[in-house]
Length: 103
Image (cartoon, rainbow, N blue to C red; front, side, top):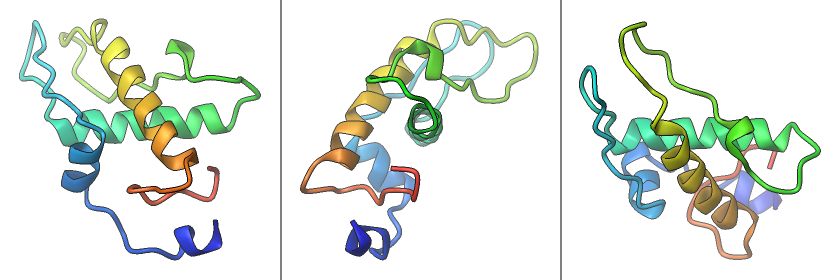
């Protein structure tokens, strides 16, 4: 794990590609680009790492900041799915993403 922690930084674009993060259209306001979905998913993974839970669920979802009029209710399922792919990568033997110290 030490070598992985010292590895090179992974760009948001590469992480989004590795995780197959989609563009998420929103009913109100602009949609969320794959980079934003990826960063939201990685925050979800961090929250999971701080819990005693056995798997990532919607309760670990950390919504991105958005104006009050933007409805983010449909975002959680997509982010949790991307977070689960991130966790599989981060906890596996061959990682593409750089793990945080919490992983």
